[in-house]
Image 1 (cartoon, one colour):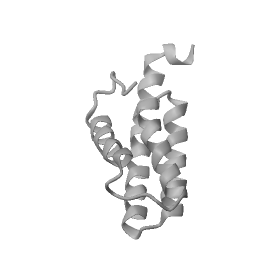
Image 2 (cartoon, helix red, strand yellow):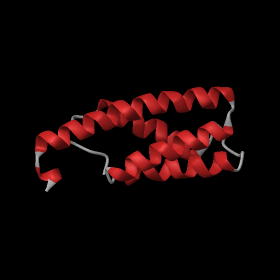
Image 3 (spheres, helix red, strand yellow):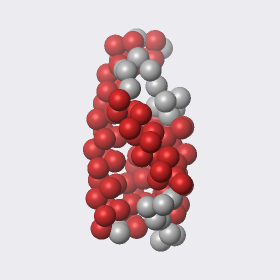
Image 4 (cartoon, helix red, strand yellow):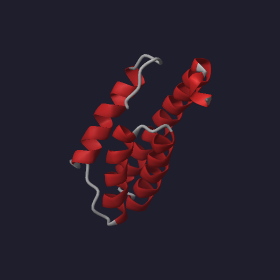
Length: 101
């Protein structure tokens, strides 16, 4: 019922996009510092937000990044990170009436 109101959906998507962009920047900063714990924590938070909007296409690479970092094995050449970068670019360019489902 909540998702039947298109104005609410647009607002949720816009808020999600703004938060995702901010969190993605935080993630990049943690990566630049090589802080595996912080990478894992940020990826976990981003994964949860993605799952709340049923955006599993974003949640999957974030889950992989979270696991890699929690094991101290995250690297920039991670397939999950490459996917996340491309998906984030797509999300931020996207029309508010479409989604990454």
